[in-house]
Amino acid sequence: MLLDNSSAMISAWPDKKLRPGKIFLILLIFCQPCLDILSFALAVHGYGNAVSTLLRGSIMLLLVGGGLYFAPDRRYRLVALCIDIGCVVFWLVHFWIGRLSGITAVTADLANYLKLAQLPVATVCLINLFGGERRVLRRIFWRCAAGVFGLICLLDLIALLSGSFCYTYVDLHHGLLGWYQNANAQSNILAVLYPLTLYALFREADDALASNCCGGKLQQLLCRPSCFALCFGAVTLAGGLRLFFFGTRVTFYSLLSTAAAMLLSLLGYYFYLRTWAKAARRGGTGEKVCCGATTTARRQSGINLLKIVVICPILMAVLAVSFKSYSPMQQMREQDFAIASSAAQNMIKNLPRLDGKKHEYSLEDLRPLYEFYMPSIVKEFGLREVVTAYNSSTDFTVLRNVRTQKIHFAALRLAQSPAALRWTGLNFATMSVPWEDGSYDLESDAQALYYYNGYIGVTLFLLGLLCLVIMLGKHIRRVGSRKFWQNHEILIAGYGVALLLAAALVGGSVLRRPSVSIYLAALLAIVWCDLVEPSSAAGGGCRLSD
Image (cartoon, rainbow, N blue to C red):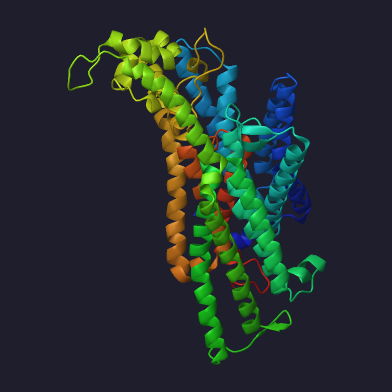
C-alpha cells in the first residue's frame, strides 16, 4: 500500500525533527483549553471572538505546515499536500456553485468550513508526526491528554471556589460548566479525555514494570500495587465526579461506556495473560529475563494492574447509576419538562376539535401554536410549509425542540435552493433571517455535514471511515484476533474515536469544534499508525504485549 514499509520510514526520520515534533505536539494539545478559556473571557468582556478566531486560523496554518514538515518521506508529504489542496478545491467549488445561485457571502461560510476542514488536515499532520518516531511521540500524546484533563479539572475547581463558574444550563441553574462558552463541546472534551487519562496512568505503570521499577520516583511508586490502586482510584473518582456534575447526557453515559469499553478490551487481554502465566508455571514457555525480572513475574504484575484498571471504572459507573436521580442532568430534564408542559398543554387544550374522535386541525387552528414556538420559521417559509414539515404535530416536546427546528429550517432552505447545492451544500449565511439575531446553525454534526457540504462532502467523509474499517479488517486478519486484543493502545484509541463519532451523531459539537476535533484527529492518527505499522505497536521494552 501507499503507506507501507514502516522500517524504511523509521530509519528515514531525521533526528533533528524529533525535538521540534515533541514541542509541536505539546503546544498543540495544551493550547486547546487555553484558547477556549480565552474565548470565554473575551466574550464576557464584550470583545467578541475575533482574537480567538485569528489564533485558531494560525493553528490551522501550523497544521498544514506541520503535515509537510514532519512527513517521514516524500509519499507522506505528497498525501498531505493532496489532502490540503483537496480541501481548498472543494470549498472553491462549493462557493462557486453558491455564487451562481446568487449567494455571495464569504466570511461566515469560510469560517464555518475551516472548522470542519481542520479534521482531515490535523489527522494527516499527526499521522506524519507519529509515523516516524511513533513510540516516543505517542507516549507524549497520552501524557498530554492526561495533563490537559487534570488542568481542566483544576481550573474548574478554581472557578467553582471563586464563584465565577457558569452553569451548563444557564436558565435552570443546573450543571457545572466552568469558564467555557459551548457546553456541548466541553462535555465531549471531558468525555473523551476521561478514558484517555485512565489509560495514560495505566501505561505509565506498565512502563514502570517494563523497566523493573528502575525509573524515577513516580515510576517506583506506581510499581507498588497498593500505590497504583490508590492513584488510579483517586483519578477515577475525581474524573468521574467532574463528568457527573457537568450535567449532560454525553458526560453521564460516557462513565458507563468507559467502564464497559475497558471491561471488554482488557478482559480478553487479562485472560490471555492468565493463560500465559499458567503455561509458564508448567514450564511450557520457559523463564526469560526481562529488565532484571522473569517474564512470568512481569506478566503476573500486569495481571494485577489490569484488575485495578477494570474494577475502578466499573465502581464509578455503579455509583453514577445509583445517584442518577441527584444528577444535574436528571434534575434539569424534570424541571424543564414541568415548565414547558404547563404552558403548552393550556394552548393545545384550547385548539378547536373539528372531529369528535380525531385531532385534525386546520392551518388557522394551528397558527397560534406554531407562531408561539417558531415565529421566524413561519414568517420565512410560510405556515403551510412548516406545518407540512412537522406533519401537523401538536406535540409540544417536538415543537419546542430547538435542534429539530434547526433541522427543519435547513431542510426547507435546501428545498427552496437550486438542485446543484445538494451536491456541495448550503452557504452558512443562508442559515439566518434578517430580522433576527443569531442563526439556525445546525447542532448535530451529521446534519451539518450534509447540509453544509452536500453529497460530495458526506461521500468523502464516509470514504475515509470506510478506508479505516478496511484497514482494521486487514490488520485483524494479518495478526490474528488474539494478538489484536493484546494491543490495548489501539483498543483505547478506537474507543475514543467511536465515542466522539457517536457524540457527533447524537449531540454535535465535534467535527466543527477545533478544540474537540483535534483529539479525534490524534486518535485517528494513532489507530492508522497501529494498523499500517503493526511491527512497532508494542513500543519496545518488555511491555505487557511482548
